[in-house]
Amino acid sequence: MSARAIPYWTARAAAGWAVLLVAQVVWLVAAPVDRRWQLAALAVTGLAGAAHVAVMPRWRYAVHRWEAAPDAVYTQSGWFDQERRIAPVSRIQTVDTQRGPLEQLFGLASVTVTTASAAGALEIRGLDRDVADRLVDTLTATTARHAEDAT
Image 1 (cartoon, rainbow, N blue to C red):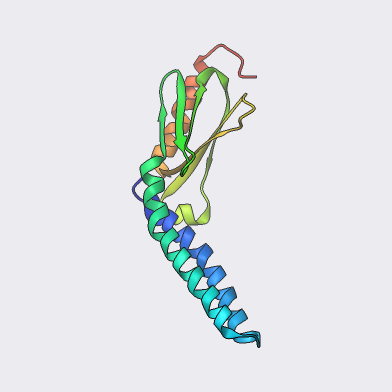
Image 2 (cartoon, one colour):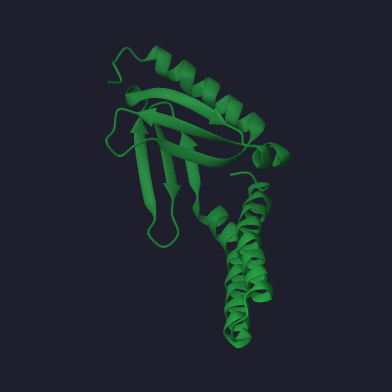
């Protein structure tokens, strides 16, 4: 992962919590109910959001890993329940790059490796744009050299 993934994940998390906080403030101002419950809900949301924004990006950066070897692609992701996946190069069907507007702002990209597996595609998020492009080029060239059918 790129170190720039930390501020990217922080910005994404903060934006999500900000939407919820703004909705609660609108509810607080507009609804003529007992404000103590609204203020308590607002405080809980603020604390949960602050904890999530402070912890999640660094934890995600520490846990998420990937490697593209000549024979397979390895990924590790998850929070508490961590998942490790291995996709043999011979089973790779497509390799795609995604860059959303916020990812573009941070110079990042995501790579999706679709395989002939019922478990679904491997997702590698938070890569430098250049690293993602090189990974796609490498995996495309590697899979083209394998004579086996990835279906």
